[in-house]
Amino acid sequence: MDFLQLVKDARTCRRFDEAAGLPQGALPWLVDCVRCSPSAKNQQALRFAAVSSPEARAALFPALRWAGALPDWNGPEPGERPAGYLVMCAPKDAGPTVRIDMGIAGQTVQLAATSRGLAACMFLSFDPHVIAPIIDLPDDLAIVLVIALGKPVEIRRLTDVPANGCLNYWRDSDGVHYVPKRALKDILIREL
View 1 (cartoon, rainbow, N blue to C red):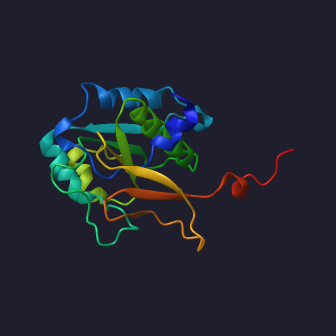
View 2 (cartoon, helix red, strand yellow):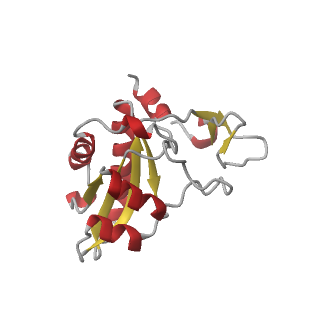
View 3 (cartoon, helix red, strand yellow):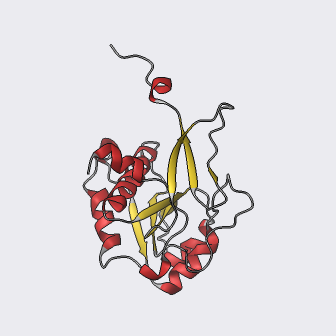
């Protein structure tokens, strides 16, 4: 697959085929992809908890804040919820470069999942007090990102930014999810 097409296909997904589950070993494979990715100062500070059991997924789901730009939507209904989660953690005393690693790791998971027919949704908005006991979080770590994963059922499409310049994503009456993106000419400021 062309890499640009992979990036275009790797849109955030918020509705999954929950019954399809995840392929055996998918979560450790995704973490291994992150393990082999670049790391700021090669600190390799991130740690992960893989959550796939039905009980743990059900306990973790209410801790997530779904789709801020869709205020009337409280997240996917049963049957369309994630089949698994990666809970990304970092040492509480990690320096500012850990934020770089978070971005690299999140994008790596998103692209790797897409390459295998899966989809992902990254969360910075979650209740760590609910999640910590579910994953038995060690005292020296803090939860920094949660990534929901599963087989996508949501159609996601890129679209041009509308004339009013609004960058909010939206859904049409058929539930198709649209993500406005600026034109290349608007972000490539100079080509020398």
